[in-house]
Image (cartoon, rainbow, N blue to C red; front, side, top):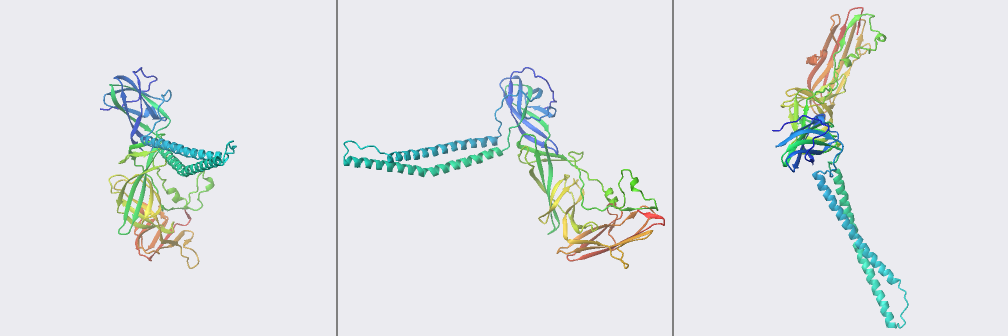
Length: 539
């Protein structure tokens, strides 16, 4: 049975039989939103039974002793251990298996390059030798022998001509071999350059390192120790692609992936990857309407802004902004549901590289799709798809790409969605649903707002026009003021009447729902009037 040993720092280890250097191999990593847990396996051979010092020489330089735990293999008893940053023994160049294979290929191609260079040099030497012989024969100007006869002169001339021809033919033959030799050298050099680039691109095992010195007792033979280490400089976050389609029935595909990054100083090569996270929440919303509180008070009691010590003007225009709740920032770890993903294949995550994107799975939901219209703030309606998380696990907060009918329409931040809860997501503007909110003029020329000493009234005409060829279910939101004072009376008339009042508990927010056919138009008349006693002012 394996046991985890607490850390015990010592200034010096007892005298041991000998020191056994060993390298570790990262076999598994659990990544959190911030930080990671590394599992390292160390295998070593003890030449004799007894007490030894195991020196693991490849831990990152930033390793912290308080975040390391050890688990011994069978028949191994562990003692004290500490980290060493100096007086480290020399070590061989650390290479991953992929690097070792790539380095062997580089060395093979270096030999091929040298062979091609030698072959080219040999051909060049033959060319130069033949040309030198031809130049010598051509420059021969020696005196004729004393007993020279016409026959001997003809023989000498024939010999010079024959030898010169043979030398030039030899040079030409050697020159014909120059181009293939140069081409072979060029090919070898190109292959070598690519092999070196491939080697440089591989995740490296080389890094600034520290050593872990462990006192242990075991018998002779092969043994193992497991190191669990917690490090910073790593994290992951969800990433989604949401694909909404309406043809053939409303459908929403929720493609899930993750982005993993790490800057620990060492590459994680071929590890078993686990992703673990709490489910933080985050709030984001499109244009929203907020209740508009109106009140009355005796005339002349309006606050003097100059007497508000460091305060801001709190008029009716500012109140909706002050009422809006602040968004909740997503945290690295919150108490709540925890989601764990075990990636099914070995993964390599290079240190300092860009986010590594890993696909997880795809979920399907049956959404309720509507065109959400807020004519007070927007000129077009927006597609809203609401759905219930029918799965058994929460959907974690994360970034998302939004696709509607296969077309990218925007990006969004998805809040955490608990199992069984309902949420709505916007999928961009519907440019064919045009919104207007107009105040008609009165007979005397005034606009739709009419104010007297103790009365104010407003009338608006809201129009939604479908200029496209697709029918849409529409949900339209607007607002009227509300009062919490009995002296301030508010009367509201609407045609047609709203389907819902005080939407989501927000007083004064009204909602209409209707189907708008292609080329259709819907008009809503909305009026409200406020009455208050003489001597009071409207705020």
